[in-house]
Amino acid sequence: MKDKKQKLETTMNRNIKMSELADCPNCACFNLRKATRAVTQLYDEILRPTGIRATQFSLLVAAKALGPVIVTRLAELGVMDRTTLTRNLKPLEKQGLIKVVSGEDQRTRLITLTDSGQEALAIALPLWKKAQAHVAKGLGQGRWNHLLADLGKVVSVAGR
Image 1 (cartoon, helix red, strand yellow):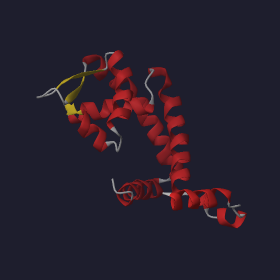
Image 2: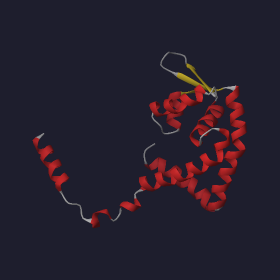
Image 3: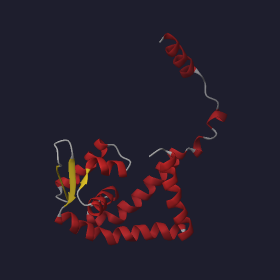
Image 4: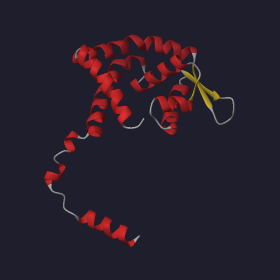
């Protein structure tokens, strides 16, 4: 224990050279998060008239596409932890867009899209398509296809 503490103190007191930081601007995590924030802001702006955010839109699509879906399964598909997903589902449930009910046992929760959620999704879908087309056109079809493939590979490399 003493060795760990001493090593940590030595590391903390070490002066980092600027040359050691040279690769940091190429950080995959930073650059992916930066791109995600920019794209999310674009989608949120276009979806603003609906009152639905891009992250909420994705959850409504998943609820529609998967039918009644268990929270754990939806979290796995979205590479999210259950608590984050549950927190993101609460506003949709309060707005009456989804319904969360007990599954076969008390430990499972099922998510279903309500009629109001179906209507909200139908209103938001054309705006989402507008945002999607904007990004695809800006990148060009070939680059867009490569991006989607590359993002899938990134998720795979991260072990998800």
